Length: 116
Image (cartoon, rainbow, N blue to C red; front, side, top):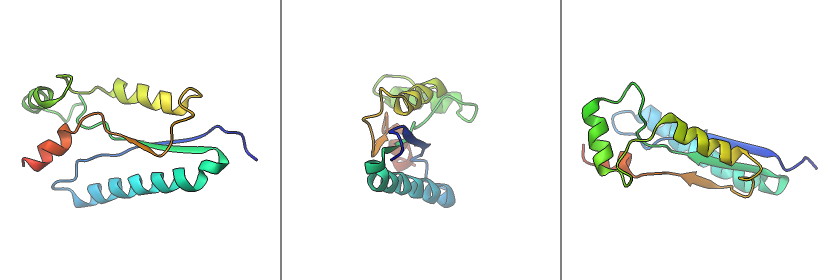
């Protein structure tokens, strides 16, 4: 039997408004990872999703960044390093007990989509 070092981490999204193909693909990815975790867990494979929500990248305007930060529980927009550190944990031995989880640090993205 293989060692218990199989890890899968995927980045998904709640950004589905005005982009059906993107939303469908991310929803499918959520389901694929869940099935992977459930079907391959007994073989030592762990699978998780990270939905980082709005992230401080070049697509985000100052106005949107301010609005997101105002709504976010910690009062800030995530940065790429936040998701990278979570992925590092999930891929490490220390995170080896975590599987079949979808990490959504904030519901701000869903709120913004609903208010559109």
